[in-house]
Length: 296
Length: 296
Image 1: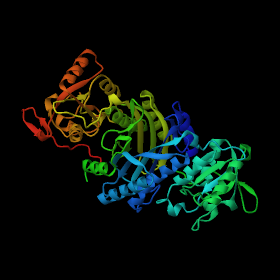
Image 2: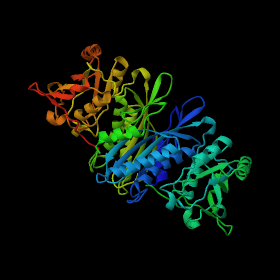
Image 3: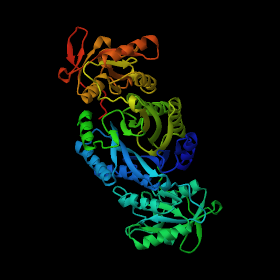
Image 4: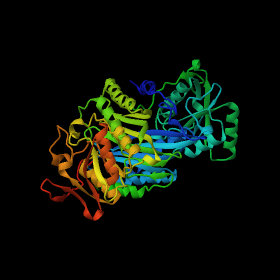
């Protein structure tokens, strides 16, 4: 069972009932909260050997465990508020290892104004950290991955291709997500955790749409891997979002005026029947397969 | 660093600020919610080799991952509502394994009316399941581990000593906890996850009290381990609670009338200077050391 199939199976098994607005299947679960706000919930586990190497510094393990979850809250247009941290730590690890990991967690939590309210520590074979974040979002700011419309333009924040180098200490795009959510009508958004190809597939699948992405438009960072690999490489943790053409104009205008919103137009949303295509440099459109960083 | 010390360190590091009523250090975190209710959060990770054996049936792994968290919500007098489930699964496990684990989760969630709203699946070396539960409690029903008063009587639900045999498929004492929380003034409560000795130490430490427990009063289940081992054995998942003498009388009266509240008086709460003592069958009181099932 691949991950997309598994998510479908489990989404069906655990369908959302009121007051749950969205259950499994988006970057966060969405619940009724106050008159003007929803509550958001997300959880992510990172494991030695799968998400970081045996020699990864504990400070960065702590940082990353929180950052990947903040990225999920950002992708919904929301603000993270409270964190619960569980960890499995091998018995041979030093007290210093644990303290450094906690320092990494404390540092990023301070930066993003998150309170750690609970936790659990256990003995394990490999270092394992699970973070659950609870956050909130103004109802009018909520962005899901299922809202893309035909004719929308598609953007990414920042530049891709350096996930492999930066994934342990990246800065989640919370600030940019909030600017987008508060100032523009963003129809859909997702964070690029598993590569553009995979996460675009998730967004178009959830929105029941197709897409055309232009290879030449994809912004690559200076030390990026080659473009063909970048598209399928995970852990960029940039945001992929779509907006109508008039709204896109406003976004581009704002981008030109202030330098606080590094976004790049990379393509457009089409009807589902057109599939998801990548337009190569020779002008030919080829199917973009949903392969990438597979967790399962 | 032992677990009690570690919790102290981390509690200090992440101190609770409004609207967080209680952060790290109790069975659940407590947050302001509505005029009459608090929100509760708890998280627990279970790991192959630490909390269950290599050959544990996946259905029971799923069940237990949820049950240990429900027990934490019960200990606060609350009701669990929403769950987020992360798992690490070795690549060689079958689809059937995963489905059976999910069945175990779905079964206990149905029984306790819990919605699974999010999750995360990853490849890992050992089976690892982390559950975060969000719940709620009427403000007047909230019970913490820090509210024990001198003169309180101490009770446990059910019978102890069968944790080793039953821990994979136990029924959390949610019903009993709710009866206690709604009908009586319970001063303090904790769930017995790591043994009576360890969890009594946590309760008295948090309440800044001492205690005297009578060995002959401790209820043992039919297939229990010997009493001396039972006191230090984890995973009974019964509740330990205290109430004033007048309130205790009411509890005992109710217990006699209906059979839905199996609780046993085992001792009393004293000033801190008396320490935590176990009165042996010969009438001598000896110090009860906080040793038990250590997770770290």
